[in-house]
Picture 1: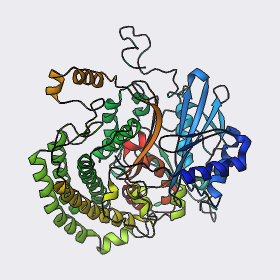
Picture 2: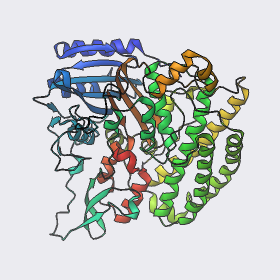
Picture 3: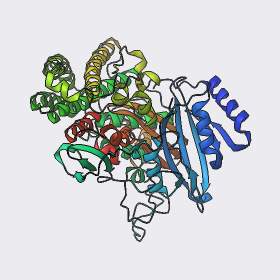
Picture 4: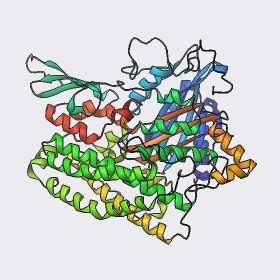
Length: 171
Length: 411
């Protein structure tokens, strides 16, 4: 397997720029095996993303992907964004967590139109509402569906089954 | 770069203002021969011109991300087959490499080169389907019938390598399940000899054909900046003139050892997409030839998987004679291998764009979360804007040139 080069200088630059600009809105920072990950305040997501896109020294011009997360033990939902700067060929991951009781976060469709369907998919499966989204409705599931199936409270197997021991056959 | 693009570009009011007109609503799909897949477009038509379009997708949604949360890692490979089913081996390899990245496995060079042979073969298979279907949709069935023989031959090569053809489930985490047979090598060499002739013929048939050019040039063009903002990747983005290729930007699987160029287009119209794919097939052939040459030079002729038996099934003789090997074998088969806690994002240059796997592991036997970045799903949302104002017959061509694969679209 090829060496996965981590540009530590650029990671540091990104972390410093973000801290200088949004110091109080960053709640965590982690250097993961593959890329830098910043945990940010959900209130400030759109603002931070716009900054990451437009700042001369960062230029994260490409929203690679966006997906929902569910942390049932903390009663939280999350959104994970992957950004890519073509100019500096650098990727970062941005994470946010929001409470299950109020799953609202601002949309990124104004920054990257590509976020439109990704956010619809996240809404469809996790029930995260993206404020300001032009057309937030289900995309892969039927409109009549009431639940958000990717949440962890929906196990894959029929819960009434007793012949399978979960400790032996997966979560 | 993305400034100035309206977020609600798909809501652009295209209705002509001068006089009250009568529009008709036309359902294209869900099962329509021209969509080449199960998805629906509800089109508002002004005569033969499209005023606006809305896509309905999800007809073959199979909840792969959910299913993956209950499967050991090696059982997720068959799910990836069914994403872009025109080039399953690419998806398989992408998934294997994601897991290997999480596990921190070092792969032998020979495995990397074998993978590259397979990946480039399936890129050719995917591109040739797409390009010959562009021909079909513009009324030229001939090229399709010729090129499909070659696709058939690629499937025979898959069959020699892994035993199956369409949904291949090829390779394992940590390499391949067996070495390529003599017959497989023979067929690959035969393909390398015959395919250029066919491809040349196909190119002569279409690329400078007046009718084909008139049908495709300036049909469904898309400017580079919008394409970037809309998340285009792969040939569709390169047709707009952006030279983004994951194989070059973030090399994986030893692509850095290879010498190839990234073809780009100019206007991002149907013709450019066609020509970019055409040029990429030549590049892929070139890469396969290099890989074969490199494999010849390697002293190692037998390695086909990594030697890390915690994650790769040990050889049967070892399983029968060695207790550790037996334990590893059992743990792998039962999906009980020790998986580190962590998360990785790995992306490969699949046939229609950047195929990404975001894998979150909590140390359990299955992924805590697995998200697929499916290139089709992201760029298909720009379709209404690409076809607005065009004629219906051009919209069909635009769609086939975007290479929308329903399996990948709906996950």
